Length: 451
Ligand code: B12
Ligand code: SF4
Image (cartoon, rainbow, N blue to C red; front, side, top):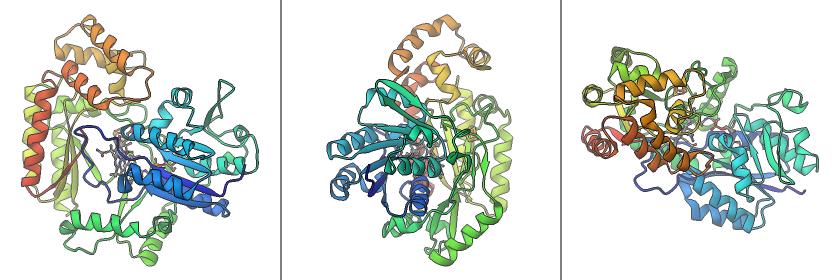
């Protein structure tokens, strides 16, 4: 098939009532897509590639672009919170005669078969964290009319009613060599690079003592050391550790600085990044959420960062498993202390959202088969003062709503979680989150979050 034009779209956040943006939303471009576009241009230069950020331009503008650019292939980056928009983009693309729509990123990776069976508008799903390699191999295969399942890793599609899947890489000759261009070429952003950098500077510039900060994303390390025992709410598809060379990383930083004048870099590694997951001020809650039972560690970390002049974007989760008045009040005290700390420049307080792949998802659906799930559940049930059988009617409802379902109503999930798995309930928690957001703004910090 002829492939002259490829459009890569980061799906915009679904328009759900009450959803808030992250503190640095629209301050950074979609790095994963930029890296895919950069690699595509390098390997298949004949293809014209555009990258667009749905959160920046919105769904109607994306649809217009599909009409005017007339791509042969549309690749969509799909997170759980942006899945409904992604389906709309797929439908519109197919209506406009696009040859193939390809979904990638976390949400697509969770449910390839369900998505492909339910939505004929989605032609392929590439799961996992190596889009630079796998998407580029797919384009090359389609252009050469080769069977993509022989040359592309992590690929899924329905063919003649059957799910076809290629393995995770080994055995496929091209995939043996990862071709990860760490370089993400800012030229794909055109003028919008200024839009992002101005948004960052106007929101955070005052904390850098300068308005001339020019921020950009980089990523030299993926994955997390807690891969086998992930945090209770962690909904990242793949936590396998992958790192690039330190030398080429610094070359990259020097290159961005010299060529483009970028002078502030946000490393978005899964396990450490610009956002500090403080989560809770209660030791028992921290043990349940993150597996370390010491709220003092958080306080010491804040103090140490502050002493060294390192600014903190802190995030807190309210409504953890069996959250009660005491644990909440410990967290509220820590939030109060953090608000008085000048090094804390941004704070996100969110209710807990159960999302796929996270340990909370299994407990929420009563799927206790994984190692450790049963004992985790029993501890939480004891703290809630309930017997396992009392959860059966709740699980019947959560399974009916969320099992084997690609479209997740996150507001409902969060509400059902807080009502049945905490001692506080959803409505009071929501009220506290709203009140805290007012206080965070009044303290001169940037507010945002999830929920
Ligand atoms: C930076 C970041 C942001 C930035 C994004 C900037 C931007 N414009 O992209 C901002 C702050 C704006 C943001 C917003 C949000 N984020 Co965010 N974000 C991240 C973070 C920290 C890094 C992402 C990144 O750039 N990684 C580096 C690049 C190189 O890798 P990548 O994005 O994974 O892309 C690779 C593969 O996934 C794949 N791929 C990606 N897209 C595609 C598309 C195709 C077609 C193919 C084939 C492959 C492919 O190939 C890429 C290259 O290897 C991740 C956590 C993490 N470390 O992954 C959370 C994360 C992705 N965010 C998350 C969430 C929840 C949000 C928000 C809802 C927060 C909010 N309240 O607004 C919004 C959602 C925005 C949206 N439209 O969906 C969750 C998603 C969970 C889920 N199950 O979906 C994550 C995993 C954090 C977490 N711990 O849970 N985020
Ligand atoms: S939330 Fe962060 S620290 Fe926890 S398992 Fe996920 S990546 Fe690792």
